[in-house]
Structures are given as C-alpha cells and as structure tokens.
Image (cartoon, rainbow, N blue to C red; front, side, top):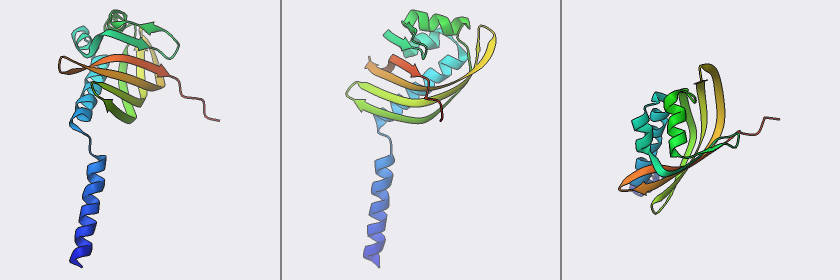
Length: 146
C-alpha cells in the first residue's frame, strides 16, 4: 500500500513539474503582460521600454511598423486598445530568444472609432541587457469558421 501511495505521489509530482513554467518562461510571460498593459494604457515611455530598437511589428492587414511607428500609433490613439484578452498562450525559449503564440481578442477605439479584433499573434522576444524586449510581432486573422 505504501509503495502504491509513493508511486502515485511521484507520478503526480512529475506531472506537476512538467507543466510548471521555467524561470525564463515566467519572465517572458511577465514581458507579455507588460506589453499588453502598455498597449492598453498607451503610455509612450512604457511602449518604448518593452520594444527593441529593432522591432518589426506586423499587422494582420500586411502593414509593418518599426519601433517609432508602433509607439506613435498607440500613444497617439490612432491605434487604441481599450481591452486586450489573451488566450491559448504558449512560450518556447531558445537561448536569448523566446517565441510566444496566443489568441488576442480586443476592444478597440482606433482614432475614436469603436471596434473589436480577434487575431492569432506570434511574438518574438530577445533578451537584451538582461530584459526581454519585443523584437517582432506578426498578427493574422484566424480562418473563418465553416
């Protein structure tokens, strides 16, 4: 009976440990949350702090912005996220590079015009001077349900 108990306990610990995030994954998840908050708040300094100088920010319609254009669009209200909800997030890390995928559902108010978006997002973060910075982002519209 004791042997069965310890076997179940060990198996449970292994399963829990396999699902636990590593320290680096937790740091990247935190960077994603910082990005989300900066995009909703629209504060220029917060957007600049999370974005790499080499940022390539791709929109679902094909438009690509650099860091300056990304920060300006959001901080000016031209691109205004009122709320952002992220789901189905995965994080994969290789050295100083992290790949994040998630679904983004948001309420927007771009240039004062209310709307909503439902996108699949790919983010690439790079560790720069000890901090995870957004290096690239690409959004796509999910295929229409049949």
